[in-house]
Amino acid sequence: MSPRPKRLRRVSNPPIISGFKPYGGEVRDRPKGSVFLHFEEYEVIRLCDFENLSHHDASKIMDVSRPTLTRIYAKARAKIAEAMVTGKQIIIEGGKIYFDSDWHICNGCGCYFNQPDKGNRVTECPLCGSGTIENCEAMNVDMAESHRQCADLCACPECGYERPHEPANPCKDQLCPVCGTHLMRKNNLLAKDI
Image (cartoon, rainbow, N blue to C red):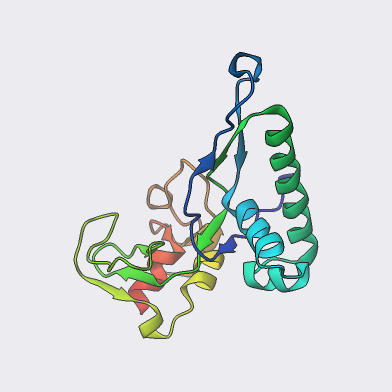
């Protein structure tokens, strides 16, 4: 039995730094290694400890359940404690997240993407380099929800058959068991209908 897929967690902005390094003390006595703090763990620390929000309010902002947020919070605090007590550096990266920023769609390849740095204007698709892109919010489409629902599905453009996407097994190389048409990512299929 495979585990349930993790729901993407919303992060307002990437952190302004990528980690911390300890200083002082005897460097040679310090254990080697790093503690990896995921972006969602950073975000929950920012919301609960820096912004002083309740777990309930923070869970709404991150678009997760309150028990899930509490588990993320406990894991983040344990990692920070480990780094402080053992003298390891903290690296902030990774996680199953999306940034709360404007979503765009490329009319050339159908790729959905966002721009985490809200100050920079998007001029081309990061996948194919095409300049024919549109802001999805201007199109009244909730792309974050669409991405969550469709990113891991392969779909048939002819009959509508759907199945979970298998990593390292491109949808375009698979045939629909119902009608024999090549499958495609559901995100791309929806982009053609917009």
